[in-house]
Image 1 (cartoon, rainbow, N blue to C red):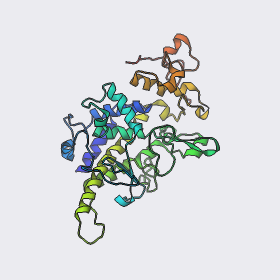
Image 2: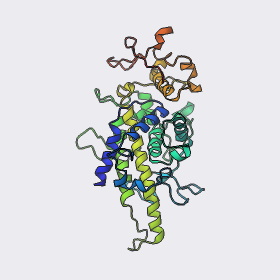
Image 3: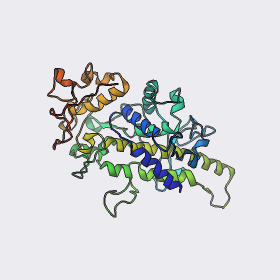
Image 4: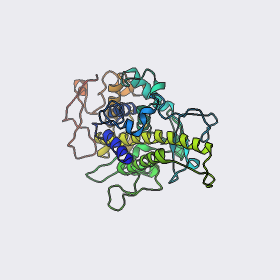
Length: 373
């Protein structure tokens, strides 16, 4: 019954209208999805009481009652989540990861703009159920990049992936018409491309009969399969370290701690999945159309800056200000680079073609513009 409830939770999140852009835009869409989902206690169809979440602290939903030593961290912690590569995982085989400034920054921006009702500070929000959901949605865009001599660069406030460098973004594409993942050879040699459906589900090939089975060697540890496993552990985890049929008080306490963090991980897993669902509403992601960050020094796969501007513009609409890294491209007129052929007054039009057969979604014959609110 509870597995059915969990499935209802993710479906409730998935059916909301979505777009996919920069991480703060993803965060806001995820917040709106939460507000309309069965995870929200205000929803008439809420599953919060059935699962037992109504007994949790609003601001500390899955925090432990005390700080403990976990993983490789020298300082005791009470808030964490798991990143498991071993299947099935146990507490001794699990990698523990901590919340980071990366997601906290986006949460702070949304809170300052009144998008997180009921929370007065980012500290109270980040430990809540919508905070954990948002954390997963933000961290799905964790990206490192290769530089000269194959060195790696990381330019954000997050912890490094414990299993090695990763560029998640090249696994966020799927063209259902051509059954195509991100198609650019160089990037795929460097970073290993997958269809976003495969990346999200954690299956060998979720779209092929007979291959929709868990991929036990999957690189993504925040998939639908992981969400199911983490939820199962959260409900049922019981260990007997000595296999002697006697569970000590310490074992019971450790199991309780892990079950709390498994709930946090399961909600975070849903956030990762919701991010990928949001990507399917951004035309470039379903046409396998590369779009490097507009502030980047290298335009990906020969694409122009126009292709890169759409995500910067939508983030501008959320934040209400221009990120200094993007100022060259959207200062004064956030649509200035939306189409490379446009200029002057014409640049006020958002040129998106939903019919164009080629890779790029930008086209001068489509005009639609809604000013930022």
